[in-house]
Length: 302
Image (tube, rainbow, N blue to C red):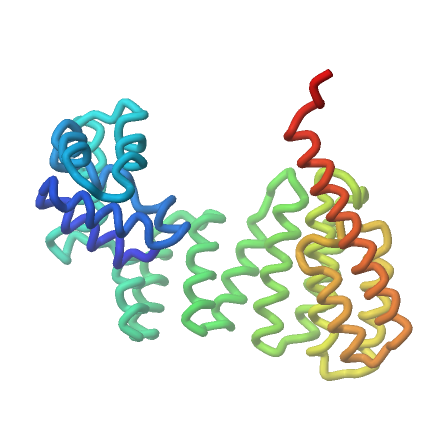
């Protein structure tokens, strides 16, 4: 669901032609993402009553489905107009009214990396240094390939993280470790993972169990790219220790990362263990799926 499609939809919607309803419906049904992201109000800008009449008079194969979508809820012309007003704010007619962040994205789509970087950093300079601001800035810089700057921004994000949930800090540290790997700072990535480990919750099977899986996965992913073979072997051994007690190993690709690490080191014994764990995890997943289906179907009638 790209901004280009959103803009095109808005420009067509502004004409408020009932016949464009079918065009909007095609756009909405391009993919699963557009089905969710392309707002139903695109179809109603000629008026809810007019749209309903147009669909009822049409012969489109999705006619009944569209009717359900536009009549099952109490959509009003006032609500559609409010939505259009928000779209006009998002896509102003005067380029001078567009924000720096919008210009950063425009420049990125045109391949103007440096201009995009300057727009985004200037936007961030005028915003509070919150987690959301830093996350937006870091992600954009990383996407543009300014990895060293992205690392520094992510360090700042870690420094200001005061969440009472330890998983939030761990997540930011894991992002930092991934960025450091992309800059070939393997020692820095290892130190960051060690810092993340100190922030992990003690219970591997509790509410934060997913945080443990992601942490262990990042450790395994680091093994094949460490240039020092002995350091890679030590990290593999440490990662295996952290793997013990981690639950639901069929999730998040943690065992795929473990297998790749063992293959890189050439540790056949570890490779056999991880493959056996992968088979056991697949059986566990099948059991969970079967139990979920049984629960969803409810008890059999007596």
